[in-house]
Image: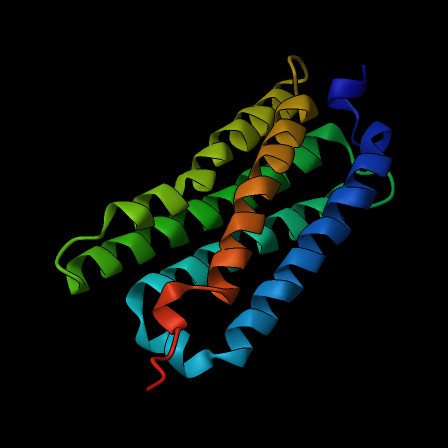
Length: 168
């Protein structure tokens, strides 16, 4: 069954990984162009961290999926480990940001919604480990649904109103 066979998804991950890597590269370039401004602004800093974390996670998952001969069990376990790290870092960063900024604006919470798609990846991983269910279909859905918000996030880093300079 293709849903539980990482080898059957080789082409998908062979495209998803480079897509995540390209967007990750754009984020890193956007941040490096204005590193002082992004570092100084808590919302932009959170936006950059979130994009790097999500896209980095997608890239690592894609690379793991491309390991020759990886079994559904090992791919499921690796996915759970990667997603646990992503969830832990996201929660910790949001907690620290909320405490330091006396609460986070709604826009920050909305920009972290792609993290909710992690639930689909975790469910897919559990399905792989159990050896039945939708498996990688859930993970692929999360990948595809995450790329749109990540494009928006990269755009927001490149053209953030917070980075505009006032010219007189």
